[in-house]
Length: 225
Image (cartoon, rainbow, N blue to C red; front, side, top):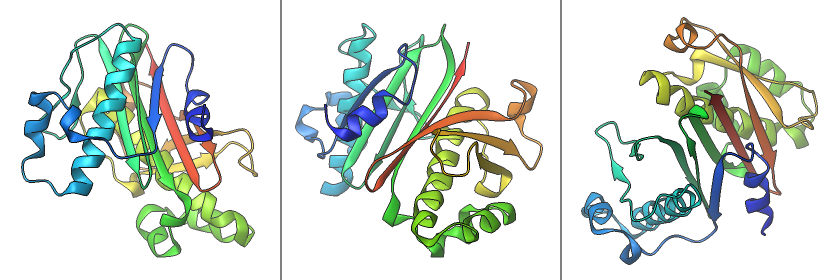
C-alpha cells in the first residue's frame, strides 16, 4: 500500500470504504452515462474526472454495489446510489473517493491538497482573522502545512455539511481549530462564525481528522447516523 493510500485508509473508521490513485484515469473506462458528462472537456479535466469515478467505483464495490454509473447532479455533486453517502477529491497527482452506508453515516467529506499549492497569497481568501494570527505565529517551516490544512479541512467540512443541508458555506463562515499545537494528533474542530443551517441538525463544533504526507494533506469529516 502506498503512503498516500495508507494516509487515506487511516483517516476514517473501518465502516468507510476508501480508494485512491496517483495517476489520471482513462476516460475510455468510464460508463457511457458517466462519459457523457465530459462533453468537450480538455484532457486534464477528463483524466481527473475519470480518476475520481474509477476510485468511486472501487469504494462502491467494497460496499457491494457494482455496475452503477456515478452521474453528476445539477449542483455538480456526484449522484450516489440510494443508501450510500460519499465524497470525491482530486489534487495534483492524487485522486480519491470515500463512501459509506447511510444507515451508519448521514454525510461524509474528504479533501486532499498539495501543501505547496496553498501559498501565502491564498491565506487572506481562506483564513479568518484568528487563523491568520495562528499561521503567523508558527515557525516558517510549519506555516505551509498549516495553511494547507485550513484549506483542506474547510473543504472536507463543506462537502460533508452540504450532504445534509445543501447550503453554501464560505471559507470565512467557519474557523478551523487544530486540537494540538503541533498538528500531531491529526484532529481538528470546525466552529461556525455565522449562523449555519447545519447547527439545527448537529450541534457545533464539528470534528474532523487530517493526515500529512511529504507534501500532501488529506482531511476528512463524517457525521454518524
